[in-house]
Length: 112
Image (cartoon, rainbow, N blue to C red; front, top):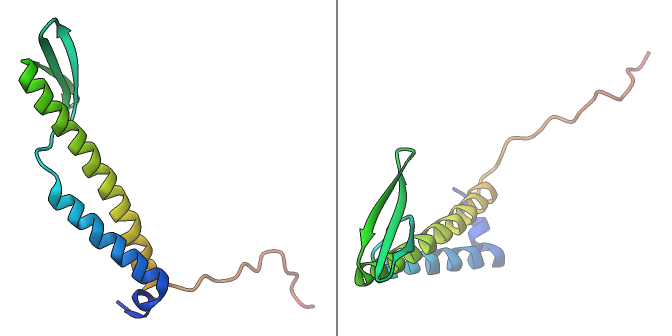
């Protein structure tokens, strides 16, 4: 990897943002996916997909609160990972020499 790009103002900005995102990852607590919805008064239901099947579990009020936090953390995780991937792809593409594309000669008439 050529470090020249990472020494530019844009490269340094991307690297700082990437490091900040890594720190955000470390701050996340419990994670899970799915959704929590009210079922009956005082009862809640956690629903998620497992191997293309919908699975539901009854939860107490206290459990529902914990699961809602874990689901929010999971969404934050996914958002952070999307941004980290985008930054990584940009840095990897701009810090290395790519292949040169051949110019299209289709519409240029050949000399007689």
